[in-house]
Amino acid sequence: MFHPRVLLVGLIVLLLSLILLSGCDRQERLLLTSGQEENLVLMEAEGIVLSRWSDEGEKIWELKAVSGVQTLREITLSQVGIFLYEENRVTSEGEAEEVRVDNQSSDLLLRGNVRVVSYAEGDELFTSELQWSNRERKLWTEEEVILKKGHLVTRGRGLVADADLDTLVIKEDVTTYFENTGGKEWENYSIPH
Image 1 (cartoon, rainbow, N blue to C red):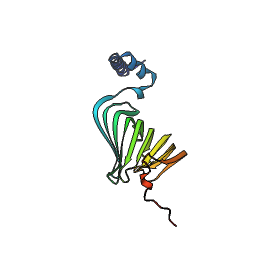
Image 2 (cartoon, one colour; image 1 turned 90 degrees about the vertical axis):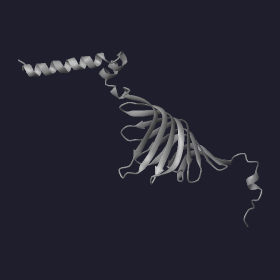
Image 3 (tube, rainbow, N blue to C red; image 1 turned 135 degrees about the horizontal axis):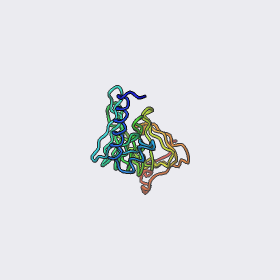
Image 4 (spheres, rainbow, N blue to C red; image 1 turned 60 degrees about the vertical axis):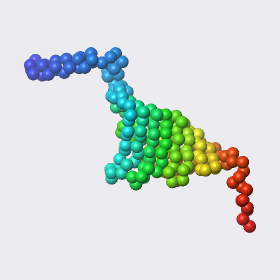
């Protein structure tokens, strides 16, 4: 019928599986047996620094977080500082309440009071949710955005931008105005003839 070695190996595998499942709590057993292993927590940590490097050895981004949780699919970080790089130099930095890092693509999803500041011009971007495409090296969102360039404020919905906010497009409902400055920028302004 069955060869004794095959039967022995089968029994050992079955025994090991039962031992592993008995070491899990009920919720973990349900995840393991239902095919939802990607949601199983692999690790929790505090004081996290994550960096993404290109194949050429250049730093692309760095995240500094108070805490985080890793699953098979993603890493979720809390209270995060974000640093975006071009040619191994920080071009923008920001913050978000939460950042999710896709373990396959290294794409980022920033959520909750997202703020990004460009080092080049000091421009500030505010939104509730912002994504970073690692392949395209672009920031994008479909949510409402506010962009501040000095006292000039632009609001709209949807955005695509490069890492330093130098090139960006706000997609729709765009309005631009000056912040309340008491009109002092206009005191010495004259219309050219």
